[in-house]
Image 1: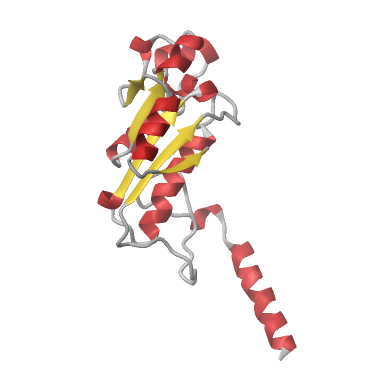
Image 2: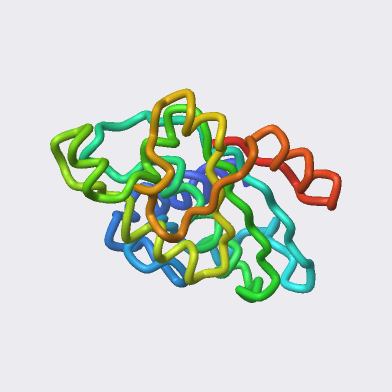
Length: 179
């Protein structure tokens, strides 16, 4: 009996390791946030649930020429819920961008001037907005970093602050995630 269990564990771990990036799917945000389908998962999103999520996006852990990992993680969130059977209409997601991540909302001209490369996040911002995500940037972060409010990507709206955005949405019952 123990040998059978051990063999089953080894085989299931091998199957997980055998998956490659080519096995990833992007059902909602095409080209971003690739995820693996896990049909045998016992814990799954509830397709009957209305999801209300506010996400604090503050980190920049990658190079300026790479898509921001936190934004890509938002795409993953949408793709994961979709694979779990949650309809796009049941996903109410708000991004509250601030800190160093505020630089990612600059239009291509401003981003290129600062980093000497094109803004790799433009297509992802467009895809997130098309998926119904509300995207706001902290006005305090814009001023503190001297980011010109007239040179933002069109999908992004300006908020008084990240702090007031998070408290507003949390008071409305939104779950808070931080990336």
